[in-house]
Image (cartoon, rainbow, N blue to C red; front, side, top):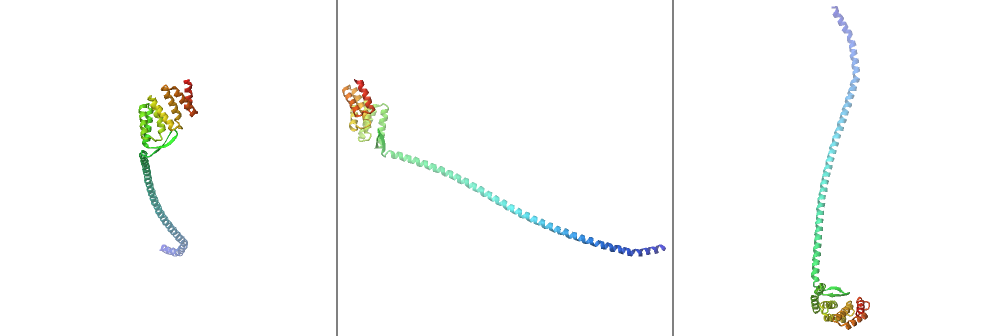
Length: 263
C-alpha cells in the first residue's frame, strides 16, 4: 500500500519535468526541420537544373545529329555529282579523241583525194621543166616520151634511143626539148656508128641554137665523127672553129689537146 502511494507521488513529480523535456526537444527540432526543408528544396532545384541540362544536352545532340546527317547527305550528293562530272568528262574526252581521229582520217582522205586529183590532172595539164638551163612548158606526154628516150639512151641501147628521139621530133617538132633531142640523137647515132647521120644532127643543133650550152660539145662530137670518117682536115677545122667560138668551154680545152695530138 505504501509502495503504491510512493509511485503515484513520483509520477506526479515526474510529469512537470517530462513536459519541460518534450518542450525543449520540440524547440531543438524546429531548426533541424527548417534545415531539412531547405536541403530538400536545394536538392529539388539541383535535380530540376540537372534535368533541364540533360534535356538541353539531348536537344543539342539531336540537333547536332541532324546537322551531321544533313552534312553527310550533302557530302554524299556532292560525291555523286563529282562522280557524275568525272564520268561526263571521261565521256567528253573519249568523244574528243574520237573526233580527233575522225578529223585526222578526214584530212588523210582529203590529202589522198587531192593527190589523186593532182596526179590525174597532171596527166593533162602542161608542166614546167628545165633542161640545160632553159625553162619551158611541155605537155605531160611530151615529157614522158622524152624521159623514156633518155632512159633508153642511158641503158646503152643506142638503136632504140635513136628511134625514140626521131619519133619525138616527128610528134613534137617545135618542142622546147628540140635542142636537147638533137644533141642526144646525134650521140645515139654516133653510138650506132652512123657518123654521117650524127654529123647532120649536130649541125642542125649548131644552126638552130649556136648559143646552146650543148653547142661546144656538139662541135667536139662533130669533129669526132669526122675523125671516124678519116676526114682529118675537116676535123682540124671544126676543132679550130670550136676553140674560136667557145674558147673558155671544157670542149675547147679538149679540142686543143686533140689538135696537139693530131699534129
